[in-house]
Length: 242
Image 1 (spheres, one colour):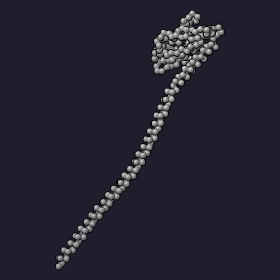
Image 2 (cartoon, rainbow, N blue to C red; image 1 turned 30 degrees about the vertical axis):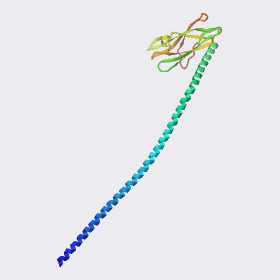
Image 3 (cartoon, one colour; image 1 turned 90 degrees about the vertical axis):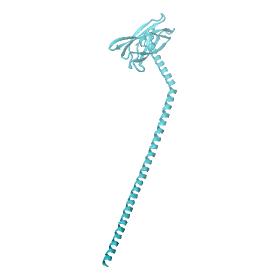
């Protein structure tokens, strides 16, 4: 009988052991699943939060891009208006510049008449100006010729220019046909009171002008021709014949 009791006792303990082991395994699996679910929920929440932040950034960037596009469109419209305005005003500006040049020539003429010694008459150089023109060693010149104390007839003739200066450190004389844009050796004039004569001079790149010799040749015998040498005009001084 004692042997039968011992055998029944060991079977009960085994059942309890396996039952506890299975319960423990189930608890571990459930715990692992819960942890996994918790982590998944946390990751999902972080993803949602990051998605909201990114969407807000996208909206902000789109708004900034829209403002930049509006500003660019405004600048383009402003530039277009300025170009159109300039094209409309360009003829007026050119006209006013021509009027200013004519007034300067007229002032030079009256200065010439007023500064002429008593009894002096004939052709005089009222003024000679030269300013840089464009790229290179080019100049735009303007010379005013005036008839002093004798306005009863039109005086006609021709003039020529010779510019003296330095080229590569040596003295050099450049005749009109070499430096004038037209390549002409002389050009005509015709006026009763005064005339503003203009043109373009193209010097060698290393040439430094120092003086200009103006030669006046009237076509009639009533007026005497002459040559006059003056210093090359600067910004501080453009008047000659004083």
